Image: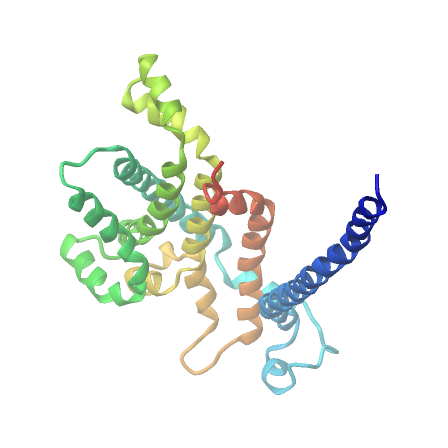
Length: 300
């Protein structure tokens, strides 16, 4: 063994920590910048929610004249909101519309996604055209459809009924639901379905007992997003519902705005009462939402 043979490895071992340190520095800087950006974005998102909650404890006169004064905090806005809002009725109507529209929309989206990913079309153009037609709905602003939907409801004789809201909500949810489900089903192992078919499983049982249980993260994501959308949707509800007994959550909150006056304190308190249950539900099921949005993103 010569001296050169001894020195060469020592140089490599001496230079490797330097290379490792130089490789870590840019990564740590990128991580710090990403963390700071994430905290800033989170703060910008949470700030309006916190501001609504803080304003809900102020008298209506202070909200416009002195919104940064928190000396006269009161619970009067919440008492007035609880007395003015038909809480049971508005939550009952909203839950009924949400359950029916989300169930029907999810079922239709699953059937369309399963057909687009599993059925063999005679013409590939037909399959791509259907997929493009469904996904093009994501590019269409929903509120452009207000007047056409209003005219259709009048023509069908369902204006002012639950169906007047359920049908548009179903139609609006299909593009997004189909996008998530097709992304999952494309990565779904075909061997599982083939094994079930060899065992004599029919199409209905294949979908209900084999495919759907494995789509729980996607289904949970779809349910949460669609339910939150129904709770927050206002333009369709304000135009297509004219019966006070069918008031929804969003319509009930708008009652604090009159023709000449606005009860800002009551509106903030009502908005807080509406937002908090949604935030709690989202916080509890956030892991399902993350799993549903990222499922199928990584192969292997």
